[in-house]
Image (cartoon, rainbow, N blue to C red; front, top):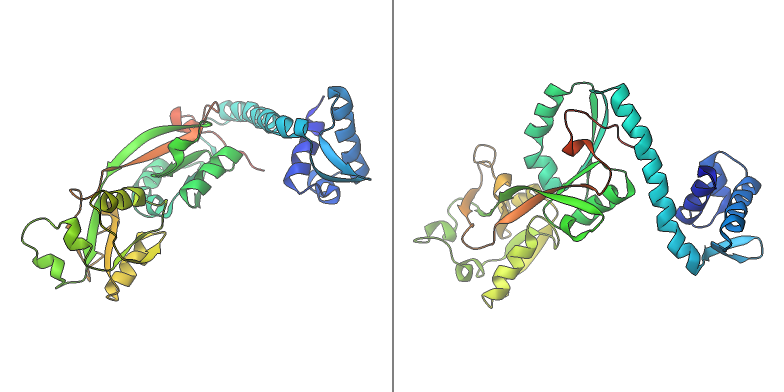
Length: 295
């Protein structure tokens, strides 16, 4: 058994069982890929792929069990190389961070700035996506560190560490009726207006939905978006009342809007920093900076 055989299996599954594409990806010939797969199957005593003539069409039941093990072995092999890279270049390399838009736009800028001041030789890569996409990037090895509020704690393959807590704010145009309310805004008062907020699964949306449901209210969500900048834009147009993360409102920048504290309405949210379990990522062992794995 060797890594060429394992890579042939992984790439065959990843590229839809097209051996021509696999050969191109591995810089070898199609017969060479077929030979590597067959030699591994002979050594293990199983068939990994379903065949239709000379074509591969899918994974066999043993192949379904084998593929995650192959991927894990290749990840671990890459991690071994990265450990060596760490000690060769203690303060240089590449660090890949995956985050949702809200985290990348509002929470991370000062952190990234401070990190660069301490580790100027480290190249940072910042990827943005939904919480589930952030998790997928961590699991595939595309990202070293993930930052998101939703989803990360749901994966056993990830170590999700509490990062910071935050609350929501209500944003409205100047002169809005909610600004005239005597005392804290209630859910009943809020539900009278069209709502503009995050898409399901983003930036604490779960807690927003749960609060209204618990109060027996069905708010009219007229528009949902992935990030607060879009939400605020449509609030400015008078389309509805916005519910955003408090960190996404800056009185100096958002001069055409006003914010109302909503911490009494919705449960406090917890943003998590996650790494792939067992990787020994640099996120938990600074100052040594781990080079990001490239695939």
